[in-house]
Length: 239
Length: 319
Image 1 (cartoon, one colour):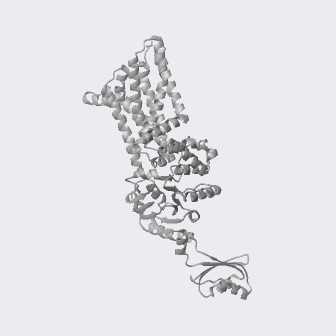
Image 2: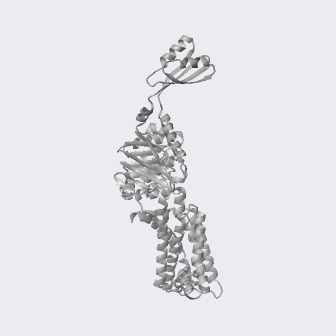
């Protein structure tokens, strides 16, 4: 456990020393601001977070989170620091979880800065705190899944660009393509696509519905990608 | 401190390390010497618990590198060849991070940082980002990290590669100092370095151990026959034939330069031809400006044994 907190501290620290992290934060805040402003500050616009959350923030996260996770293991593989790290008394699980929670902490800080929007809504309309809580939880779940996917692809290659492109592709597929396919298909195929689509699972969080089905989906898929990352690191030792 | 038994590492059909066995006792600096691609880094990575072996076993500080990996890692300080560091971190941050990974308590950590910073002359650089340091300074940061937890065994892979001559000298004297406190296994392809720094040497070539012992012992194994170098002023054919006529001389190499003839004379092991050469020069009236006996160097030995191994490997078809 001490190793885990040491790793998390280092990861958060290195985010604040990285120019990429600041650039990504700026892109994220600008895009969210644009989506919120255009959705809400128009005549007849609704005073809720719905326009921002569905679908804009999902689209933004598909692009932004892989950029935050691309260097996590890529950099270690490219510069060779993986060798000093993995010969220190720390396990692969601790390294992967440390990187995951480090990225999640930075993501949580970004989400925290979005709290300005509900405050604005609260000034001009009614704010549903329970709904807000449910939205926040949904964002953390979807962020966790995206970070775990990005972390996995970051462990696959020494090249950040390849890692980020692979993450974009897989996330776009899981988020949007499966969602669209579910609309086109019939019968059991439709059910399978719906169950696999990240957006279907996220939509209920936007509506304020906390369904254990969705919670289980996010927790298991995130755990699955973290597991793959650990196995990938262990495999590297044998090569 | 290090026990290696029939250790093998294969990469597909390629055998990088082929059933090597050796022991390293506690204390002192042991040189692990071999040409590039001989399997030094592979062996070292197995000992440092980075790669698992394909066969055989290795124990470091009494623990098996595969089944008791964490115990080994706690007792080993390892500096990889390229000295990988995090460029964005400051030296103090990096050492703190590495100390915490080694479970040093807060007080121990502060004491350890003070100790290694003094040991590796990092004082004025401690608050500089690592990315701004020179190659030599980075090497010292890597060494400081490797000795932070006062390890029983220190494993250094080519620690002087890429340094300038002053830095090489400093690093070597530092390694000698460290050898008084830790067991140091140092890999190198520079013979001169091993002769200077190490108490014992293990020579590896083409994945096999070809010789073990102190530099003096290895020289002794090879150095039974000496060669005499001489420079005489005289006509080359006559000088050469005169030298060949001395009893016990086996081979003469001669080269003329500026009227001087340079001779390299191999003779029977128990025969010293220097006096005969002196008499020859006096009787013929040739000037003599150099006459010395050259002991066999470790280099001759090294070149000979590694060449034999390389030859063997080349003769085996790759598939």
